[in-house]
Amino acid sequence: MPEETAPPFESWTEHLKSLDENQLCDLARDYQWLDERTRAEQAGEEFHRRREAVIAECERRGMQDVAGRCRRPAA
Image (cartoon, rainbow, N blue to C red; front, side, top):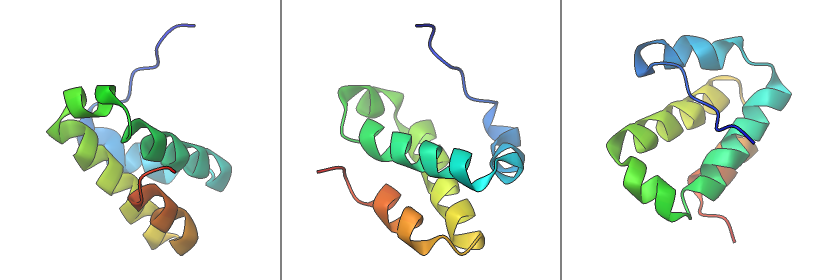
């Protein structure tokens, strides 16, 4: 399975705004799980900035529960 590439960080916020709620929920879930993996540590600061942007977009849309789940490490 080919690895997906995220849009450049400069357009990340616009990318998030273009997603529907289901896509944003899926992305938030992915970032929650990735934070538990070594790859997230290797991704470094950019990964964490993108994750914070996902959380901010969820909050902007009033999706507090999804933002909270993304913020917490996966069990």
